[in-house]
Amino acid sequence: MRRPVRIAVTGAAGAISNNLLFKIASGEMFGKDQPVILQLIEMPDRMEALRGLAMELEDCAYPLLHTITLHDNVEDGFNNIHYALLIGARPRGPGMERSDLLESNAEIFTRQGKALNDHANRDVKVLVVGNPANTNALIASRNAPKLSPSQFTALTRLDHNRAKGILANHTGANPKDISRVVIWGNHSSTQFPDLHQATVLDEPVMGQIDEHWYREVFIPKIQTRGGEIIAARGVSSAASAAQAVVDHMHDWMLGTQPGEIVSMGILSDGSYGIEKGIFYSFPVRCDYGRYQIVRGLDISDWSREMMKVTEAELLEEKAAVNHLLPPETEASHQNLSICLRSGVTLYADGTGPDAASKYLTTNRVM
Image 1 (cartoon, rainbow, N blue to C red):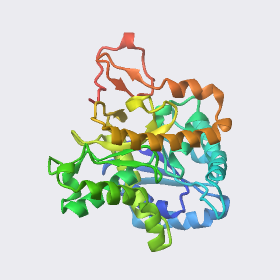
Image 2 (image 1 turned 30 degrees about the vertical axis):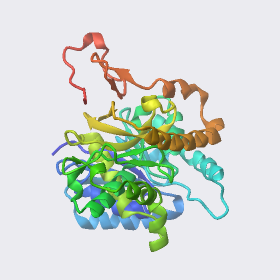
Image 3 (image 1 turned 90 degrees about the vertical axis):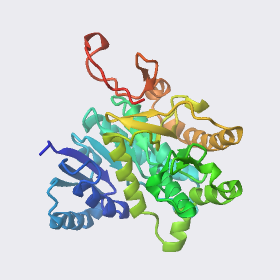
Image 4 (image 1 turned 180 degrees about the horizontal axis):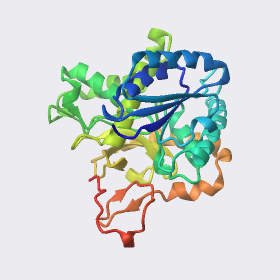
């Protein structure tokens, strides 16, 4: 059996984790041959609930579950981890303005970024789930100067999966036969679910659906789906969020299907005219544990307007927390990418031997 990998999960006794941890332990995230060590982190007053969840994991007798450790602080919980799933965040309370929510979460993700910087494996891959996920990812990455910003991502795969599922229901197609859906921008009600690149059974989607339905029904439904679920169930999305976390990490590590596009919240390098320095959802492909923005998609004027609306919201969020972002990491977030000899831009961690010593390199995604 392969060497185990260490996975830290914050908010580990919460609803998302209650669904997620069993998927990880069963091999759904990283494969049926990958043992895992779960380093579970919670608030001190939630440790007994976390111990109960650990007992349930033990009772499942998962062959791939190598070790479980329980932690009430991120400094211990992030020790030598290969993957960090940052689920815990402060929810928006009654009367709380969005700026208040951003500031309160800034404290949490500042500490987590510093802990990742000081204690995690140098190749750690980070997924921020706790909302506002895009800007929380920015805060964490800006507080981790020893790590590359490309090691941090935000979850927009939930929106991506929602778009595929709702489109499948509308068209009668199986979700596996729907490809190239794109979520642009923020994980919020300003996001732009783009079907102009998508296909159903290898035929363009836009020729199979009504334009009015797309603009007036489908887009608002994806943008507000989380609120709709809360109104119906009284609690926020948990099982679907857990599945999205699994899908995001699975594709990041093991690669996307040939020709497929997935959506990931990543630091903008200026692609498609989106301002650098914000975490924005782009269409990507993954291989070799890396992701690359899909270039050259045809963007209409209307689509670009939608993309700019969600960009503006992210810029506002960044401005609201800018005084909390260390100035010494600004440059790394403005000059993120490297270029291969082909000229194709590729996100990478920049580690390893220098170019002069290389004999063979096969890390191109596209």
